[in-house]
Amino acid sequence: MTGNERFRGVGVALVTPFHANGALDLDALARHAERMIEGGVDYLVPCGTTGESATMDLREQADVIRATVAAAAGRVPVVAGAGGNATADAVAKARAAADAGADALLSVAPYYNKPPQEGLYRHFEAVAAATDLPVVLYNVPSRTSSNIRPDTVLRLAEIPNVIAIKEASGDLAQIGTLLHDRPDGFLVLSGDDETTLPLLALGADGLISVVANEAPAEIAELVRAGLTGDFARARALHNRLLDLMRCNFIETNPIPVKTAVEMLGGPTAHFRSPLVPLSDAARTILEEALRAAGLTEPAGNAP
Image (cartoon, rainbow, N blue to C red; front, side, top):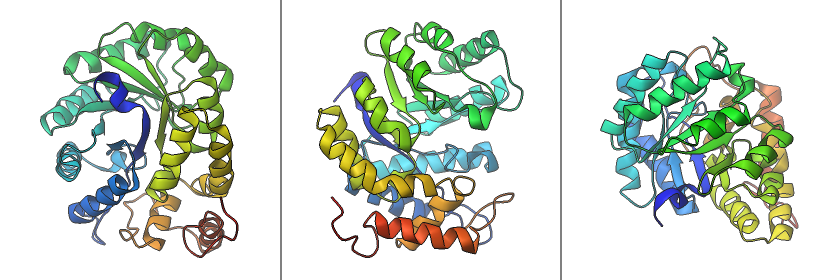
């Protein structure tokens, strides 16, 4: 698979394992990435929000990207997070990700400073110009307090290496407009596990997923079923995973998903401040969601 098609399907927004003292645990990251590849994901996405990138410096992010590239060993692409609320910082991250061997960039909208649409355009234009790598825009207004409107996305899509958007606005009308008006070859990817099924029905190209950290095979099957028109199977898997999709946000992401990964035998759920361990009450709910998804104890007649 070549070109933009490499980024259809499922990308997993990787959690970043840490040691108890807060240092990166790159060996655990490599083991987790291997499990994702064995589970059937189409590409790996280190240094996103789920990877706690906001708590890592530039050198650490480059180390995580290099470790992910080494773990992938050419079997799947690596789409590295490279965003920030200062354009110069996002450009530096883009160049560092390219130097670390990333195949593409995922660049989140600037957060906190709430730029107007022209500011968003110029920001991403600078990121795209920083390297020759394909760029996936990332729209997540709940985190950034700004929304990349469809008209701005379509302007950016005219830049040759801006190839896709990860859409986590939750606004089906907005995303539907993008799907209707996008140029040929421009990918629209769900950035929210729970809205993936309806977006696939509208013609979206895949998902960059949180729940894939816990259930890579199941979410990969869900997306492939949707992409091939088997919506009965996709719907069954969506319903099976729905409680888990929601529980991943019962407290701030990635607190629940890192905890669930640990429950499933993955890396220990250490966090960097200001994130803290999952509360006991939320842990009980998360454990039940994992059982309902069939990921721990058998879940009866789970499809």
